[in-house]
Image 1 (cartoon, rainbow, N blue to C red):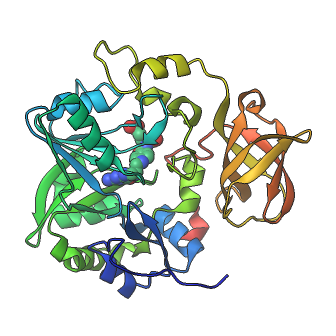
Image 2 (cartoon, rainbow, N blue to C red):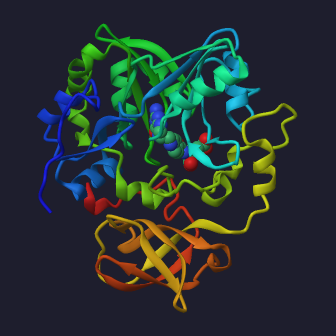
Length: 378
Ligand code: THG
């Protein structure tokens, strides 16, 4: 296949769009109505840079939904099944979001700015519409808007020294998911210890969308001595690490227990929240699970659609994300399977785009950090 993607005003450009094009972005996806680079044309190189050095990602498509006002705290507590009672200003949390039937509709990172101001840094779905509807229906006194902040992720083992060079030693004391407002060469940012990889790193939320090119250049220049390069949320590493991608790993009837997010819900809470009764029921659900699958045969390219999975001729699941792991030297995949087939080693047949293959179930993640980087690949 050979075709382009139309660029037009119906979708948004990231504040880093021009910088990523100049850096050689080779392909884009659309995420939250925003163009997001996914490749710079060297998948292996981008993967090893994330594993061994540091990689710079335009993730401005992870849009912010700001909930502010007198009822902001009550609103986020009602919206989210996670217990936020211990969450402090300056702290972030990973917060699966469900509808009234307990279906998983997003998995944002919550940033608590103050008792009356929160951001949801969202995955790919229209959370602003959802939040505005809930606020209006429940009569919460809040303003819901996109504050226009744009995350730039700095990920990999060399992100720490790089970010220390840029901001000073204090930044290394940030705890996981915590954040701090600061500036860098006069550019206002929020620096957070977070990011969609298991290699460690930070995210810089650009607050003035006019200054995307400047921020990109400042980080890129400072990163030269650490081997920085442009990258994107890394498909291979996320499969190895078992990081969830809403929409890729889920369908519109997935519940959080099926995809390993049960540990982020607090169903014992006394106060009510969206989906509470449904989630209490679904906790016992034994329909299917997202698990790992080793797939036999020569290296596979990523699947362009979910691959059907069969057992004894019967349809039993879908391969949602397949990759060849350079560290394991195996084909690996995140796969939904009927609950009865999720035991370690259970054999299934996969109808791939490259012919039928045998797969064996395993647990996620495939690789657990801290990871020792292979010496041969630096
Ligand atoms: N950064 C920001 N916004 C985001 C993402 C991000 N919005 C969309 C998307 N990513 C949300 N999804 C995830 C999924 C997983 C994690 C973070 C965001 C994550 N999970 C760890 C895990 O599952 O092991 C840790 C969770 C925990 O222990 O609390 O990091 O990346 N700004």
